[in-house]
Amino acid sequence: MSDFIKNLLVLALPASGKSEARKYMSSLTPDQCREIFHIGPTVQLDDYPYVEFMRAIDEVTDHILHLGTLFFVDHDRSFVDPHEWGTLVELLNEDYADLVAEKDISSAHPALDLFKRIDAAQQRAGAKIKLGRLPKDVLDVMDVQLDKVARKVSDAKQALCKAGLKDGETLVVEFARGGPVGPMPLDPPYGYGYCVSRLSPQILKDAAVLNVWVDPEESRRKNFARAVPPPGVDDTSIYHGVPLCVMLDDYGCDDMEWLLETSGEPNTIRIDAHGETYMLRTARFDNRDDKTTFVRTKPWSKEDVKTIHDELKRAMDILAGARY
Image 1 (spheres, one colour):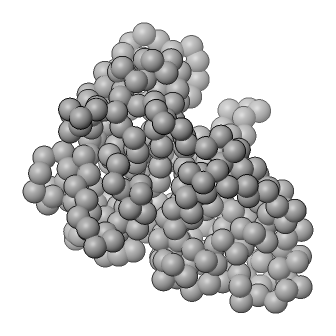
Image 2 (image 1 turned 45 degrees about the vertical axis):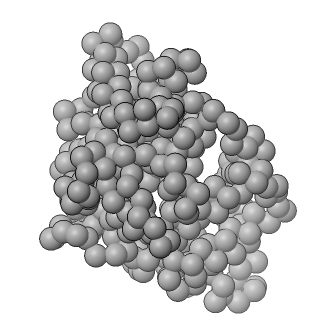
């Protein structure tokens, strides 16, 4: 069997170093990535833009329309309905299907289209629809107010769909999950076990899992540090902060260690989904001793590069080892 990793799930607590690890790998040539890390050129799916869009919706419904928040208990709090964690996965599944189909998603009203997509994803995830319950005149106002942020999400997806997913490329699906501190297993809809099980069979059948491993305390520390971007930088993919209440209530712990310990096979997590059992090869990039923050700025020292390179290679070799 080939050692090539077709679908890579990059899972970690917030601010763990996921983006920095990907940025480091993207600094290498395609041949280096294939030979060293067993991946091709990457095509990225991430649920964070949808979280940002839901936050933007709440800004409009609360501060402009005076209807209160729809998705979050408050602007610095968790989801009203925790099943929205599943909603986000359903949006990723749709993104994958549209990517493979190279679907044209261009629209004159991207906000209205995103409202419909979110409603449909909520229904699939077992969450209550929120936007579809609003009167048309309210939705029309929201369409205007949210056009810019919706167009940013839509344009990014349109660019991905136009390029498609080619043979030899690696799909990277990235998200953070966890739950409040408590006994394992985490109750659905919290945790990786639940959210990975909601990924489509087409993603799961060729998936391997890279977990960027940090403790919750380190995740909180790095989260607050990254919320202050350097002057003139507004890249929310790297420089954004999760509110403290959310860090405690939704990311107070995660279930990756429990999944690894209970799978019955080393370096594997067991996911029961869609009437099947998926034994997903899993490796942990150990970032408890910070190996990634330096990637945010240049120049990079040879010592820092060697540290991140060696640990990434060790983890990716574990994932590729199941495919020899």
